[in-house]
Image (tube, rainbow, N blue to C red):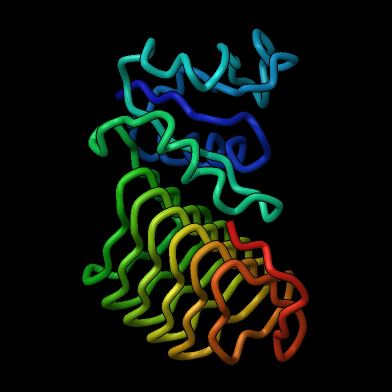
Length: 216
């Protein structure tokens, strides 16, 4: 088994730990050493059975693999910023795929990504590095999902769509065929996206409409 340290001790990271437990039950693969988190109140505590050792900046003290588990609609670009600050080589990052997920042989999942329970990714689709796809999400054919994207639970990305870097696709939302969600955008809970979403825009509703810009 290979040692793994997870950056962030929030809900998304805890879900990844649960997914890893399922991976290990099928085939022992990862030894989750612990979390790193910048909240000093968590240091030394056990979160979901896993110890929080210290701040993110201490990552180089741990020689194993790394996965950035943070995923929040309040700050979709956080994994991107953390990765830039850590400046670790790409081969340090683990990729976790839950045993119940289906990833077509013609599709690709990048380094540092986590694919959760019952996710379906069909043919000729590319997921970049540091992508998190939560449970029950579905990604269609010939989709491009760029680095640091989060796809929340139950979301649907239809064929030929593109989701640009560090965007967040909300739970139970849908992105129509061929639509582009641009960088740092946020698609709200249950939104139905039928046209391109500008950079840094928040869209909600059916059909999805912009309510604010959060460009960074």
